[in-house]
Length: 345
Figure 1 (tube, rainbow, N blue to C red):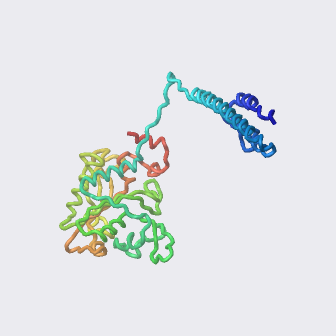
Figure 2 (cartoon, rainbow, N blue to C red; figure 1 turned 90 degrees about the horizontal axis):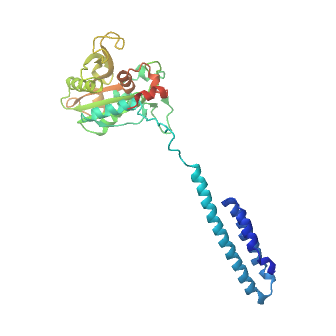
Figure 3 (tube, helix red, strand yellow; figure 1 turned 120 degrees about the vertical axis):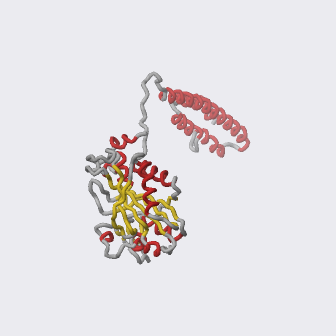
């Protein structure tokens, strides 16, 4: 078996011929693996006379060490060669013109939402975000909306199947006012909160979407009047549209406020003179508001003889459309890059 020990040259030649680390690994397994040639020599020791085994084993171990050293040196050389090849492929020609990376920007709805939160937070409002799936009680009943009110109809509201053990119908909230009820139930006046979030209604045309965003506000304290509401809205109009903007209140009706008003802002495009945007009136309707209905306060355990309050609600998409001159609400949800890139900083 002495001739079997002369495997060093064979292993070296095959290792030198390996073109990469993978090929070298296969050569290594051929000689040093579990079924390799050197391993086979060690297994053959059982067939050698006992007195000759120590010398034979010593020679095989020396052979293994010599082959391993050769493989290690060749592997180091191959790694260096592969690294050079990789670096050569990653070279950058600094004389070539650079590629311009486009800068991202906030979506106009997100931009307006952030502006509104900053504006009203500066007036002392806290932000509260309620759940998007609500019960009929919080979405309608507690807000003094009668059981026969049209807003509760299936064609206006997205109802969901009640879960196991759920007695009351669930629905996708139609307004973030439901969050105001949750706050008044848990917190005693004074209350000053802002409730932004997504709402859902079965409505779809150029100025309405089945899903849109609302920003509602609520103030409850002693001595709150409609004058406080208009003063706050005047400040909102100046900061959101123009320093020359004015507001006016028109009588309206909402179940949860009494008295109720529609709020108009003087047209920022024509300064109130009349144009196509404001349809020649000089005014644009922006939101609904009013004094919190006594029944709503009572439903939340707030004494209406001691406390009063006002509430207001606006569609964030509508504010964005007016602020940026957008004529179709669907542009805000189509994700057309040509439209969105107009709002880069």
